[in-house]
Length: 283
Image 1 (cartoon, rainbow, N blue to C red):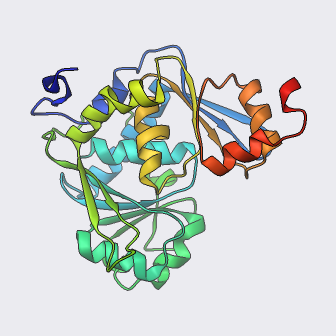
Image 2: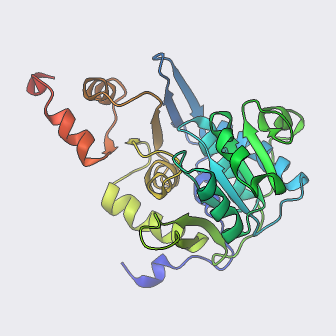
């Protein structure tokens, strides 16, 4: 591969890679709920939902280059708010639910964040974070003011949104390190990183092709989620499989067969425990 093939256009937004599949027949997402029900979302429906949220962000005064800290679980909403933020030109801090108030505060101050987008299950930590109340707060679910409820806000919004023109060098993600030595370090990923990622890691490492069913078990909040379940899957026209339940090797093996998953990316521990399931060879 020639190096020039990995250089993004000067004006480029990662979401362009997802939107070009708006009219494909396969689902963008298959969400497997804990009660064994399934939710299927087409690319078109996913983009329209993201457009509604992007309109909210823009009307609330968030501008290109503003930083948003996002803490959400595995869900349709995770994909919606990530796409919406990128379309609005925001830079995202992926944030694990394992972060405590002091971790949140550090990221808000260090990155000069302008907004928080969090699931209702996680807002207690934000209530303890000193600087959280000084920026815009959006919640998926219900929460008292000043939290603004996204599901209510989007009801009056159109399903169209003109993606903010971003340069390929503009920041898309700010992933913080673990802070093993000193404070966490901000690893900045511009939109051009995504361009190269989709032309290298997605096809050559994960081996994803359009129409594949991809199950990468990483959770939102980790950079791995952006690499595989989010960008590599949707940016390749594949179907991202989302399992909302706890890990069970027997359940995972059943899911792989039931939903015809043909690209799997999970942790060594998950692989090892599945390999130890009794009578695996006859499954």
